[in-house]
Length: 122
Image (cartoon, rainbow, N blue to C red):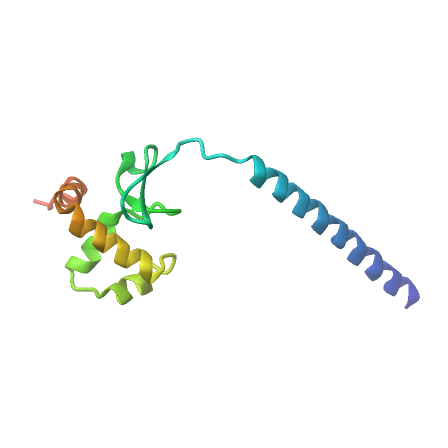
């Protein structure tokens, strides 16, 4: 029994040391990490453009979710709260900001929607 206790204590000690090493590594990486492609600021806090994500189409910052996707849910009748429920990685504020961006840049988003529309089967 005492061997088992000693083994468990040894494992716990090694796990603690690994956690410390992982924390140090995470801090080192995060302090040196810089995005390879800078985001382009837009006039909405949750909307951005990144050149190598969807060819620079407006997206929700920190995601690959295009503003047009949120707008299409809304145009199909979903309330912002329902959109946030269907896209659980987004917060309600992000959904509202995407809709505000659409209101300010309607022709741009309508063009993106048209370009990404699936052709109808004949």
